[in-house]
Image (cartoon, rainbow, N blue to C red):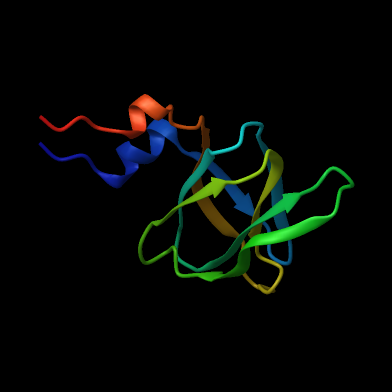
Length: 125
């Protein structure tokens, strides 16, 4: 039994169009030490810039995943980030370098709670 990419996208993905010369940025909160921020995305037809910033309590942003061009039109981009401190993380899809093309991006971003000590260890008998 096969599942097409279109079927997969309809389940858990959000679709946005990033206008030429623009970017979108949205925040997710990781309120517990050890939370896992995970992402999956793909773009249609062309690449897109992607990165993640961490905001501290004073509002200062620090790049934790540098904003760079990703060939997500060729293969899906998948990644995780271990959130070492509770913070607000900004997800950035940047199309400011493109003067001619809007970009359609399908993405899924999740914050998973930290694994419990008992879940992290496995018993060997």
